[in-house]
Length: 90
Image (cartoon, rainbow, N blue to C red; front, side, top):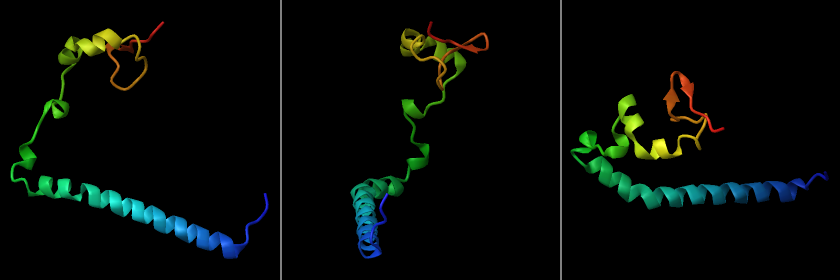
C-alpha cells in the first residue's frame, strides 16, 4: 500500500473528525427536547410500562410468543430453559 502524502492525509482526517463531531452534535440537538421533558417530569422515577416490568419464570412459560418460537431461538439470551438446558432447534 502506498503512503499518502501527509499534507493530504492530515487535513482529510481533520475534516472527517469535524464532520463526525457535527453529526453527533446534530443527533444530540435532535433528542435534547425529549431529554429535557423527561428530566423535567416530577414523576419520572415512578414511570413503568410492560417493557420495564420484571417477569418471573412462570410468566415466561405462559408467554405465547416464546412458546410459538422457542424452537427457532436456540442458545440465545432469554430462550426458554427446560430442566436446566436451553431448548434448541433440531
